[in-house]
Image 1 (cartoon, rainbow, N blue to C red):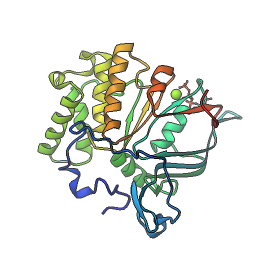
Image 2 (image 1 turned 90 degrees about the vertical axis):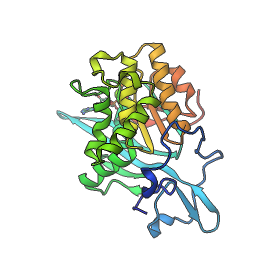
Image 3 (image 1 turned 30 degrees about the horizontal axis):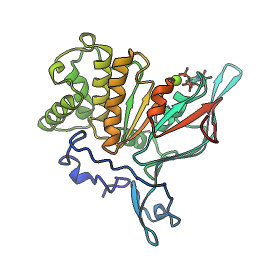
Image 4 (image 1 turned 120 degrees about the vertical axis):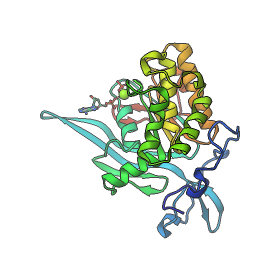
Length: 285
Ligand SMILES: Nc1ncnc2c1ncn2[C@@H]1O[C@H](COP(=O)(O)OP(=O)(O)OP(=O)(O)O)[C@@H](O)[C@H]1O
Ligand SMILES: [Mg+2]
């Protein structure tokens, strides 16, 4: 098994395992989440499930943040975007990050997505310590395990829907037959098979975001990070987009969504509330 590969999706089977949306089984842990007291990471075992010698197989957090801080320097002025954040996200979770503008939600998501580095603290992704990794290692983890969905889609305008979705597979070096098969499956899954050749400006906002979700998930990541994915959409399109993301979560992907929308936040299994760079603790209001 490659280091850090989830035991549930070992690499030799990745190409052949049934793709997302093809089964309705929820793989997420049903009960309360428990950390194994015996840290098998110390023995080089990584993955979303691990065997605890005295407790049997248990889940452990796909994300573990400890004491994460991020400060931006603007002129002489330090801006404390994140202040000593601790966070555990169990495998298969569906969490909404909420809070006022400027509270640090996007900064947190960028750190989770390995798009930015903290100034202080530790970040373990799937049991792998990321803070000591170089750029190449971070890029590989990002490519293999994380799908990012942005408010403004970030599609390449001159490429068709199919070409946009295929791009990460080209970069990952997959051969053309496998690329085409995967792209066709996921286009069908996001309900856009009849829009395959459309360029982004020939699609509605909701359709563009579904292309972006397809692109983020065609590499079969275990973690989807979405920053205000419905922020540029009308209510109906926003619902379609969130339902597409929730279908991925129902397949076992961990889903973290930043949103200002209380109704969308209420759909998540839990809400993480931020203010002034910190995660608020205590019962939900
Ligand atoms: N690259 C940067 N340079 C300087 N300051 C930054 C940078 N990125 C973010 N900040 C500052 O860090 C703080 C947190 O920003 P962040 O974008 O994480 O907020 P947010 O909660 O996502 O807000 P919004 O809801 O408006 O998107 C803000 O005060 C912001 O001005
Ligand atoms: Mg933001």
